[in-house]
Image (cartoon, rainbow, N blue to C red; front, side, top):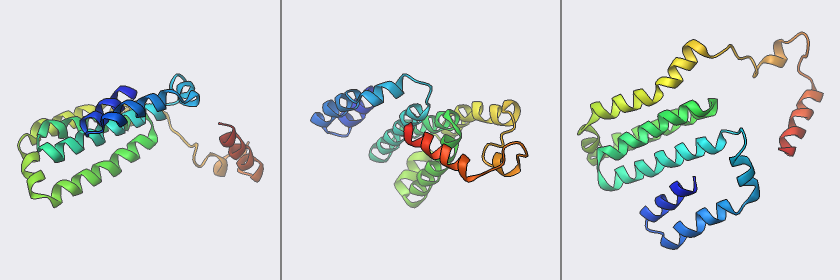
Length: 167
């Protein structure tokens, strides 16, 4: 994460910021603790940052390889967690809108659209396979509403909010 942050900021022109930002992030003990734990939010942040940096470079340089990297990063983001899939859809919509609204970006993207689409589909393939064939049924969102053993209650909501505050 800090390497991507360093080189991304260095590429964008902030020499001092490219050195200070990763050092600041690594000096936060809570970040270091969560980075070494089971949470995948950090990994989702890495893929999102990678996609945004690559898309910014695509916009600046009109090189389709950066668009391929951006879409591959979004494909990997979609596999990190359920929220990553939603974030991928939103980001793809924003990228698509930006490309459609700019003639120069459309021309740059059309240069190697087959390679870009194939790379994006391959990156999304694990998400598709897992979601369609291996993922167990999940009723966590509505579990309390349909559960006879542990129905939704104010106490369950309070316990969840307290746990969230402790996290």
